[in-house]
Image 1 (tube, one colour):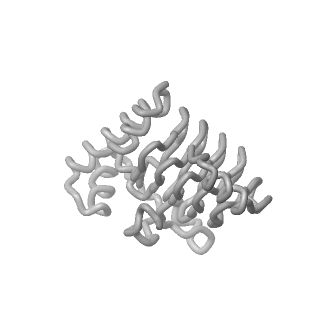
Image 2 (image 1 turned 90 degrees about the horizontal axis):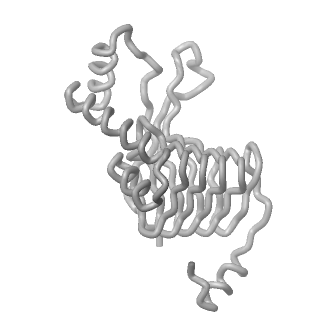
Image 3 (image 1 turned 90 degrees about the vertical axis):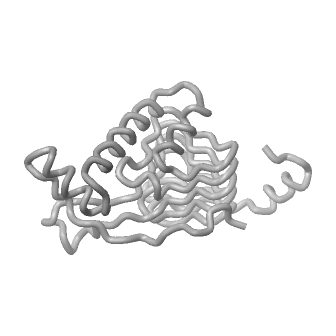
Length: 196
């Protein structure tokens, strides 16, 4: 059974529209989020500070705590490596279940936001990224918006995941492709008490 059940659907966001002034950018971004400019600015500052501290923090428990404070949904006994980029604009769309591992240098993106001249080529949207129970995302991999990594799945080093990865499957490459499935092996190991 999935740990996170009420995961939101993808939703459209406007094209990149930063204004010429910081105040204008804050006001337009706050209006899109339905909050006051002061609340938006304080939330953004907190988010950036926690993100930068987590990026370099040597202690996993502190990194996990900082990303939770940013709004990421993170289960218990999760590993998040140093120098990971967990989306700065929509961290609340990141769901990492118990015992999952996100290794050093991994990037998790939950939104695509380009300028309007790419209309018809790229869809501007925010979409959740879900890493299910005990999945592993290896070093320097990238998870794009809207993907789900199944339980006990492995994303090999340097992979770019553009589509869902089934449970008990190893993927590799850019774009990531299935290498092998291994459910019977994991089930046997779990039955023999190899739980961590």
